[in-house]
Image (cartoon, rainbow, N blue to C red; front, side, top):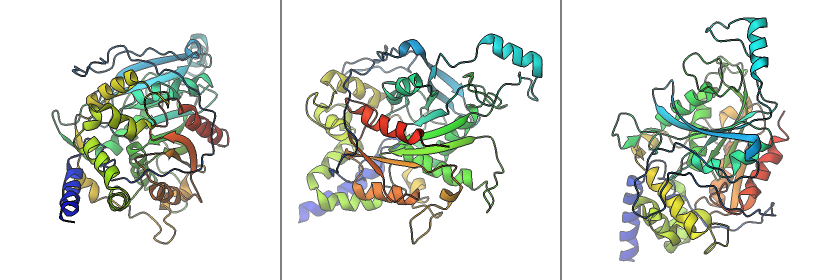
Length: 426
């Protein structure tokens, strides 16, 4: 009994030192196994960024290039670039755009001749240069925008969806501000996300990404894990700019839909920490050492358990893949989230106490998607149900997958569930 009390004290203290965005992993519960609604996994070897070493002893530079083994590479273009956000952050973004739908130079030239220049001195352009909305991806802990490039980006881009991912502050490609900072406030992530979404418009006067998406592209925001919590905090601030009738006072972002994949719930890590301790002493220890002590960066078996499930390469993730992912994880855990600041903002005050529904849900342009994984070691069923209720849904969608739904052999289960939801958007 005394040992268990000492461990509880250690676990609670350990959660205060988790890497950027990773705090929730050590606090989120559960290894539940639910009935899958999707099947037919497609197995393939993930693509390998060319300059990320696989050796346990690593020097990890900022990504500068991507090579894709996706068979649709002839119809999409993937680019890694460093952009200056209006929020003041120098951020890494990865884009994967359909080549076949991009307007030709002659069309843009004709548009400029016929319609002249816009108020910002740029050529006037169409609201949207692609037939389908832009998918804006936001990663979770230990990850950056690279995690979307391996499968989701080329898959959706080959179907005509422009795809862009942002790497949050504290990752190797997006240094924390000020230089050398080891803590990042949640408000900084929210401001960067807001600037990123505004920069997707070619008409934005404060920043220029040069993606050619159009002057007012429809945007579908997709967040995974901690990226889901950041998305929910952004939605709170974004819809604060609307009046009680839903009239938008800020039309800089043409939001079409929101999807949360294996998301940290709106209450954060506290309630789930208690559930995990009650449910499984062994699993709570794995979570703690994996994230608080960063053992997932060097321990292959632990890394596989937390993110990818299965054993050996049973889920389409080889030991070589694990080493490569661990290289990314080391690169992308430079700074830590300011937990004291975050705790003061959780749980959300903008929620109906009876139903658990967020106040902004009635303003959303479409029904959101909340997706969970049947083999998620990180987010438990209670946390998933909480997120679903918060987003105004009766129940989440659950697919056959581990926590990292976008990686490994079962990535297509989650992708196809997202695609099914996209096809229903207005």
